[in-house]
Amino acid sequence: MQEFTRLVEIMATLRSPEGCPWDREQSIDSLKPFVLEETYEVLEAIDRHDHAGLCEELGDFLFEAVFLAQLESEAGHFTIADSLTAIADKLVRRHPHVFARQEGDAPISAERVVTRWEEIKAQERGDPGNDVRKRTLLSGVPVTLPGLLRAYEIGIRAKSVGFEWEKVADVMAKIQEEVDELRAELFPGGATLSGSPEIDRDRAEEEMGDLLFTMAHLSRQLGIEPETALRKANDKFTKRFGTMEAAVEASGRKMAEMSLGQLDAEWQQAKKAAWRP
Image 1 (cartoon, rainbow, N blue to C red):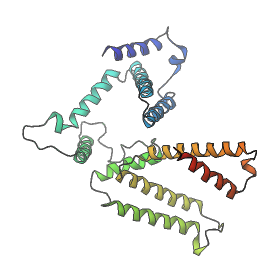
Image 2: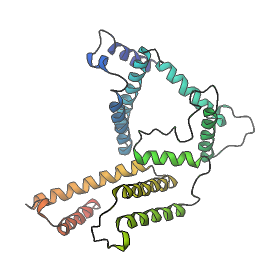
Image 3: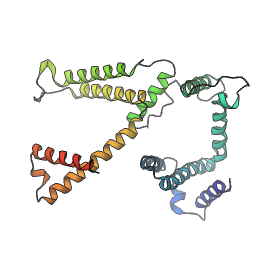
């Protein structure tokens, strides 16, 4: 594709001795924050269903991939062509139901596709000629993923070998169990919820983590990607808080000087405003 070739050539020019000083100073480590930023900008465009914005953001995201590959090519490790070959070969290898289908083969479900994908990955890890043979089922989940998303991906891997709650109700029960354990840690000996007991913050952190981890698994069972759900909740809260803030300012009051009851009343009004047609 000539457009892709043009992008690769532009990147090579930017890194050349006659190129851009800033681009020439970059390393694979210095590009990490830009890769992360572009990833979230792609996700934001998807959340908005902003198709024109997504077109632009995908270009920016692709540029980061080409930039990284250019640096690796200069170091003699691999080229962008090697990356393209690797992903093409992987897709063919992991979709035997498409590329190795025999006449008369029965169609398989999307769920079976995911399971089969993980089975093939496990086989690849066990291949003596494969550099990743020492990796375990869960080690392939990047530790740099946001916590909720990593928990979600861990659950997908565990499910591929049958380690899974049978019903959504089972996960809900587990969430309640984790809530009870966190409550017991925060209010030992039956202390009232209105009290302020001294707590073991390490233990509380552990119980809070267990609760969030289990909630990520519920999200997966419901087919809801948790990071997306949380981003939308953050956006909803931000908009409502902004509405409340504007209403308080218009009344001549200051939020910091208002009681919690007064703030909650304004919050309820902001929620009602959000539902107005």
